[in-house]
Amino acid sequence: MLNEKEMSVGERLKQARVTHKPALTQKDVSDRSGISQSVISDLERGKIQGTTKMIELAASVNVNALWLSSGHGEMRSPETERLTEIQRLSHAIQKLDLTKEQVERLVNMAIAEASKMAFEQQR
Image 1 (cartoon, rainbow, N blue to C red):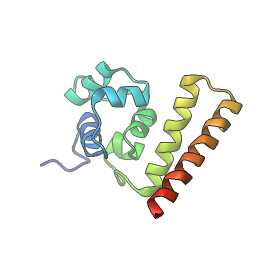
Image 2 (image 1 turned 120 degrees about the vertical axis):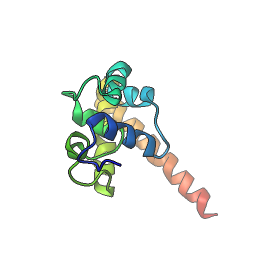
Image 3 (image 1 turned 180 degrees about the vertical axis):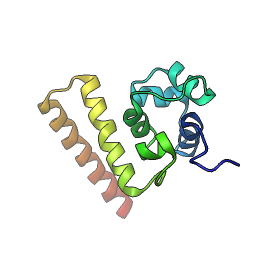
Image 4 (image 1 turned 30 degrees about the vertical axis):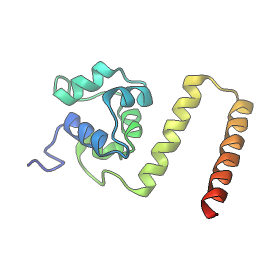
């Protein structure tokens, strides 16, 4: 079996996609990254060797961009997952063209819902 540095970008992408919790489809990665599903498929099949949107692609599967592009470093860590979630959120906000007020309203709603869920779990 190849070590991560010997794997292609596409092989590392597929590994990241299928080991994500929950596992992601190519369509999921496409939706999360803004990269077409055909490009993701071409990467995984080795038809193309990279993309200029490596940061977005790494964020979509919650992995370190350096690891995805070269195999160096950790695939996932708590810090990487936190940062990639922030990148994904930023991408979604831009994609939806939300105003600052709309984002603040959504954040407040999410905090209220999370607090309610935490309270219910403690019962």
